[in-house]
Length: 519
Ligand code: HEM
Image (cartoon, rainbow, N blue to C red; front, side):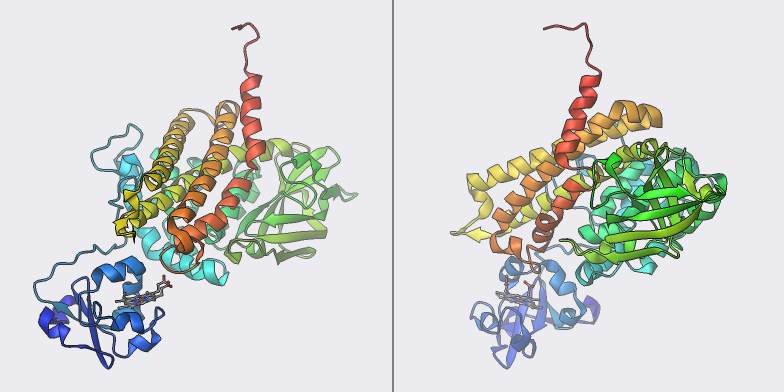
């Protein structure tokens, strides 16, 4: 019901409705009739009958105990019967596309009065469009399927396909040629890594970690070997199907036997005597999107070493879900290949050259993870800033305590450091060839990823302390914190474990140590 259709009441009129059978309250300048709802109220009837609540303005009490989204739910919106004459809303309701007005709630480039050399008008326009798109289509679907474990809805995949988001998430390149990107906001030839950063960071705001990976995380890592190393025939068939969300693809590398140690893999591919087919045998574990994938970009041991082969779902390919501590919406699965016959034309890159195919993919994958990790941490900081301002303990807001402010300080430092380093690396990526990136940035990206995920885990731990019991509760005011704290280890493991990445960063630096320098 719009405000125009709602009746206006004075505060005195509302105050007369303060009995169990006739119970009204004012919340944010709106009048609610809770007479029938009180017995179904999850917080109990007694709190609503309190003399400071029944018939009174309960705005402060309400917002100290509920997320504002509660009032947007249709079943509760219906309880609203009127507005209060002359009363202003105390709390601003968020609408799709809104920017946070909390200090540090957005990266500096999106904060009024701050400037950045990295972003142009098209980045800013894309950011606004992505924010609206995420709020309107992605977040509601994430809320639903993070909880029920079903894969993201086909209509979301299709909406993303219409805007060519699946193509844009593969980064800049020839694959964008001729496509209309986000209704023409960005031209294919101007699309750069900052546009991709914007897309990744805005999608990360859906705050569904498992769902977010379900939203074609498998494609982001499984399709590049096809794009960069597939035959023309394979590319022409597979890429359009995947970009249009008609088919799904995943990367099948890790096994029960080996994860970061790619050369330790045991899945084998042997050629048929006529040399026309591969016969693939083996198993893969923790494969994102496996349960609904149509194609598996698979690492195999071959006669010449390690080879990557594109395996379509078919006879001999089985997948089953693996229950992990994030949502089954990610489609995390166990894959078995049992005498699977695949044409040799499905080989991606050189036979025996698989390690190059996989390694060239790692930088981009890890950088994407840094983008989303930086943004998720910021959403947590935003929530902590709001919570510690509105939550009162011992008669004062939490943020009036120095020990609380110290936790906020550290969160701000981690967020700003991660984003600034990320933007610097992104700028270098925009100015280096793919080959140069592999040579010069592998170490930087590895170090940033391990920094952002270890700092993310510290932020998660601190945020739980700030939210108390709500930080370990899956509904209500701390649900974002509970979710982040439970799922942040996925950032820290997927794409390379922290210790492995830190070590990689240092080893890359040592490789370039001059032999002629002395202290
Ligand atoms: C339109 C009016 C209201 C609606 C629709 C509503 C709805 C809800 C819902 C959905 C929850 C569960 C939230 C969760 O999952 O944690 C809840 C909890 C609660 N509500 Fe309300 N409520 C309303 C008004 C009020 C008011 C005026 C008070 C007064 C102080 C109140 C006090 C509480 C309390 C104490 C809880 C438990 C909070 C917790 O466990 O953290 N509610 N309410």
